[in-house]
Image (cartoon, rainbow, N blue to C red; front, side):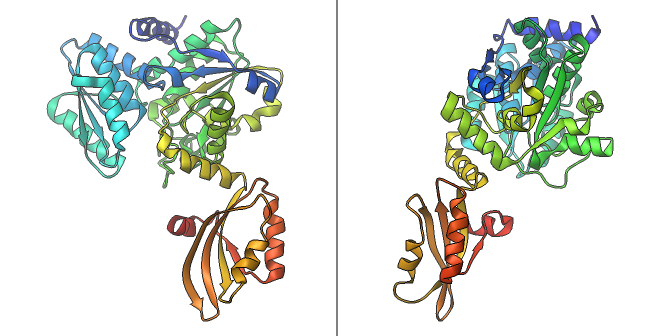
Length: 415
């Protein structure tokens, strides 16, 4: 057994003093859907509803063993890492300072404080995470506190490898395939390294958000690369630059084994799992399930483990998720409509709609000419194909329009 295997198993055993193993559950719905033996490693059911508690536990445990007098820890995070860090500060009875951006939702602040209690202090600083991170690291330099990184740390990677230990202990044989989410790379690096050593026949596929494809960028350039822009919707995995330590473990991944998940499509997956299975997943937690359709030929007849990495979903986001899911499915569109300014014009337009079409938004933007006005209209329907028929009718009737559903500039300002 290698040193890494031994260390990962030791870390896993130590974790049992603090929290139980997360469930490894066969999912009948997904197994039937993909004609495979699909298991979910439910990291969304950890005490903090994400796997981040593992890396925080191991890094804090090892630092305390190395320096028993170290009782001051610091992290920078607005999400799952902050909650895992807070939980472990309370468990180890150490002091923790958590730096969060000023823009962090109050719900996340309150939840983090609840996990840490009197053992943590939350500091809100910086409009952007880079500013928050810089403030946290500067604080460590001034005070001698230990900075606990969210993913780019060998002890964190070792702690996340406990997911692989539990997968292998929970199955009668090694899985044929493991599908892993990628953000900064801590989880994927730890699981890949452990299982490559202990179950070399197991294959891997990796899922990352289209708006934060840091692993794909690093593989393309041969080194960690900072993305020029990141879509923060998948906040648990929207990382601009994969870690140096994590990429060292993932640099051998084949580029075509990394799958990109569009943010709007992820919303359809969240809604599907919520409605069909009653499973609440955050966007990052749904990543691996979102790419399964692309893996359908590969997984048929195989034993597959999908790691659902987190379930910290704020239900205030549900309207946005439903909206994006409908837009991705083509069942909701936003149009700029040139409406004639004459009696009966609106009625003529409404008569073009089918029985299952619904106007979700109607707003006059301006009177663009003496005889015409500009209208923003949102239409929902049960079948995306309905729009082809509607647009044809509108053209024949002389209702000029522009579809702005997928126009990022106009959508941002008007929708």
